Image (cartoon, rainbow, N blue to C red; front, side):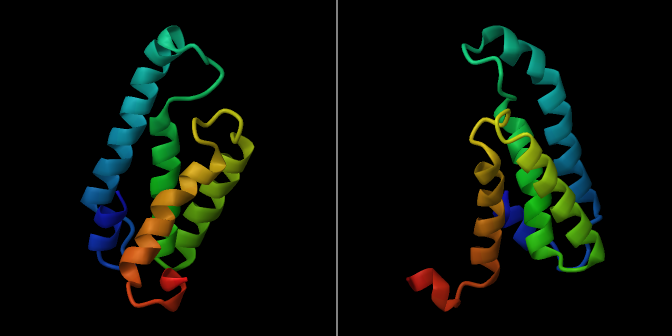
Length: 114
């Protein structure tokens, strides 16, 4: 997911590939929420696709710097924080794609060697 976000041109968050990725995650997340709730032993959490969808939006913020990316990232991070107990790996799981997108876009950063 982070590699696909990093491949898109910086500054153009609204393109066909990004829209297709987001709608696919949203569709499957909604479609699979009922079977997941029926078959899961811990039915208080959402399926992992919800976490991945929020992670995709936050990764877009890291890659696409601008007002639109900032709004997407802040709103997604707010939703992830509000749903922390309901997300499978928690709100911190939504930050993983953003961290990987940041590492891919800045491979020569010194903070990666610490």
